[in-house]
Image (tube, rainbow, N blue to C red; front, side, top):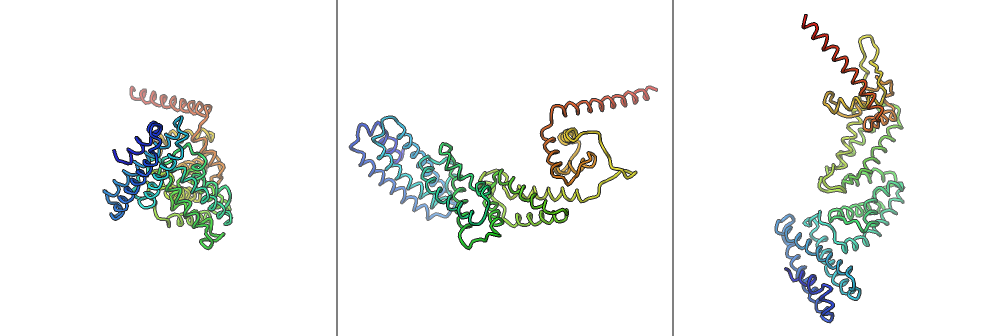
Length: 387
């Protein structure tokens, strides 16, 4: 057991303070001396190069130790009958917070990102992040960035500030700090202009790997709104090509960093979607394959039935395709749909993912008829074989 651990868990526990209240000043002085000793040890570690195994192991040891002791002190404050000791626990907490702050400032890359923040450190972080977030929000307002988009960008910070009962990790805190730092620099006078603000802020978010589902949906809807300004497929292809070029200019993100570490990076998500959109529009621009007499194939299936049957064929591996958009394009003429109609495509997607009970029943009836027809064929073949 380290001396620091002994001071907090033994000498400063509620029972010990009740019995030896007069010795509290000496305990706090001893804690101050131990804090200075740990700080000197960490200063020596800073001489080692970043990524050094010994340095990382030592930093993470003290990170875990200080985090645990901060939570122990917090639990003391919740113990009945310790109200008179509040100022003593606050003084001890402040000493440990100084060590934790030094660890983050000087050894951030060595810290364990998946360790939960101690509540006292989270409370301190909230007091720092709140004014910075409000400043960033005002700066984006001056650049005419819409309020809903501002709220979307700052939603992770708001969640941290407004939900103190939900604990986050050190890695999540680092991301929030980086997000606000980049936004403050972005909104600093002269860093960008109102006409480039939206482009620059998207570059910032993709570079940070702001891989929130809401942000991906926002990007997709923005691109689609821009494409709908043009009637020509070629113009829409130019919009997609420009967006794709801009996204690819941003360096690939580390999957272990970002708003959702380990999840699909937002840069990769956007590239995949943009490529699929280009494939979709190329299919729309291609001539429709027709039968020998010049008439396109048609079907008696309704849109929901065709969507469900397409799903069955795909999931059984009978048909292979690159995307659901290609399925829609292939069936559009057969179902007498307008391939360029986004509403029709969205309706097809909904029916594909969420078939109704009546649709399933109707398709089962169709499949039953097909099975009867195959049985007839089999009987005819067997009869022919017997003769």
